[in-house]
Amino acid sequence: MEDLGNSKRIVADGYDRMGTEFAAWNSQRPPHARRLFLDEVLPRLDEGSTVVELGCGPGTDAAVLSAGRRYVGVDLSSVQVSIARQRVPHATFVVGDLTSIAFRSESIDGVVAFYVLMHVPQEELRSTFERIYEWLRPDGRLMLSLSTIEAHDRVEEWLDVPMFFARFTPHLSERLLRESGFQIEMSEVREEGVDDGYGPVEFHWVIARKPAAA
Image (cartoon, rainbow, N blue to C red; front, side, top):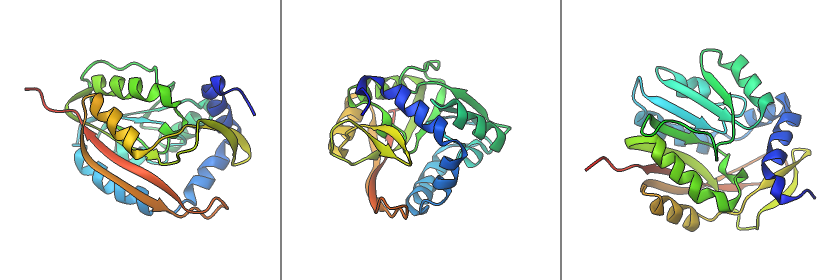
């Protein structure tokens, strides 16, 4: 098992090694929960709005999120970003760390993060939420999925590569969002069936809004 202090390198190397196999695996995931959440996300992103997707991977949702909007996808994996650029050539993609990448204050209408914050060490979650809050315009939204696994931060074998996973609970995630200034608009735990031997898993789907200026 690798040192947890190298979590970012473990995540980037893992997704680099998976390459196109990750997109193939991802396409086989039951889409029900993700599709339901996109139905909540898209009406909240007006035409012409600026959207950042953190952990965009191979561009799974980039086409629909970028349609009629200014879109930037961010991912640690240069290989996954390369795949996303080929898949959605009109969109903008950047190799970067979502916990440290910088955007101008109040320049973004929506931030989307599907299945990625489970790779962020728990001690970095509060500062990540605070940075996103600063990027968002008043009434802007952070729309994300979070793990509900209560195990400690760990590295384990996943899809044939070592991968870092962080410990989260819905209570902790909501508390940190509120302490960062967000108002919770939606919070639901939904079960997803995964037919690759991992069995059903649950994810916490959240929409958090930055309040309008007084």
